[in-house]
Image (cartoon, rainbow, N blue to C red; front, side):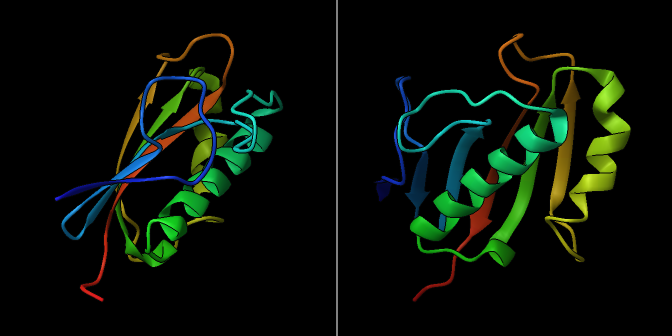
Length: 124
């Protein structure tokens, strides 16, 4: 059974997340105001912080906890941000870290960072 999760606004044709059985698939989150769906530009660190905050809100809105995240995929516009990304990552995730894929030089000029995830939810 698939269940869309409403946790904010988007101006594009996608669900912020879909729950399928005990898994929650969260769409890519950027530095966006979840109330309006508008992009909020900032430094790399600011955009990463907002994107991960959005993702955490969506995971919790979908019935999960932050520790339920088992896989993340991150997208960086610039390869020069990779070292900062790795330094900041440990502020948001702890051991055992989720499995991770990082793609670089793959975003439009409107954003510096995007992240999606998969969470495994309990049966409750």
